Image (cartoon, rainbow, N blue to C red; front, side, top):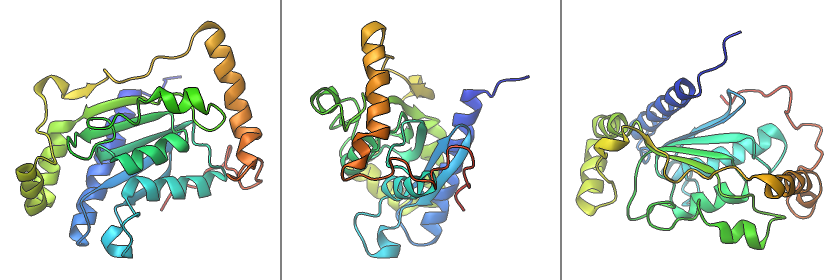
Length: 231
């Protein structure tokens, strides 16, 4: 049996984000899209909804996290990957950390607002070292993935927004060396005793600590076997 190609899956999901971002632009929304995947299945996909909902908290990544938690019946998304056409901002990155998403893939860097480039929230180990009951270790991060393609897609679908972001320094031009993604920020797996402790903590986070104020510890709706893809 052929095994799924993780690179091909990353490419497919990122290009899906480009499509979602273009749809957002057509709706008069900020041109951002996000997709959350678990075991190769999309569990949530959404555009930015700040303008549509009149709510500044409705960033694409945060909305996708909300939908994924509902679909999976849990606040713990450790087995999931989130894709975004733009580097998640600090607000979104904190939500990513608290939901414990295991992998983050984004296309274009945001030097002013990025939760990796400016404030390295995704790579901050202080959170998980201080409160391991709540925060998992930093996720693996694949930055500038298909960045030239993402830049071209944004410029094509939202030229005025693209020009504004470039003029204000909100959007970094793609790095030639990072055409396939920069894995420099990827978190290495725990080893030895640390790996055993993380395995124990992961089980405690999901089955014990989540019952205190977070919910989803043992919901029957939790879709571990049958996930309904997001519309």
